[in-house]
Image 1 (cartoon, helix red, strand yellow):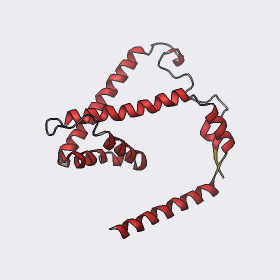
Image 2 (cartoon, helix red, strand yellow):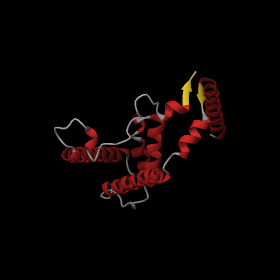
Image 3 (cartoon, one colour):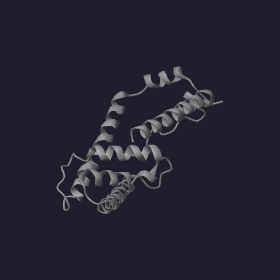
Image 4 (spheres, one colour):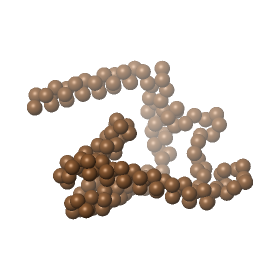
Length: 176
């Protein structure tokens, strides 16, 4: 098994090296513009965003522990790692990897995969209900009969770049 893992690791390393070489010749990245954009970043907001992301992981872990409590007693924070790994899989592969969380939880707490898929479905239904509640609340707050959407307290002020000005990604990277 160790020889197979070594070969797989070398193949992945070679693929990443090839991707880096391709990107180096294909994409021009301006580090000066990147440094300028990082200097303009509000680090308090970035810290708050990272805190919200990890709070979301903890919240989902507690919710998953509450949903499986009838089958097995699980501590509320014991599933945080599985949530982080599951969402990392979604970030790397896409939504097709979403059931990875159910698989990881089933292996961690030693319950059948079918029960965890059912918990996953219930969790997604709860997410849909949460989104419906958020949109319903937003519809109450959005003013009616006005053309100016910026008068709403929920409308982002700096949601898009000014006309004629490129976005940050356009400034930092350009294809050859």
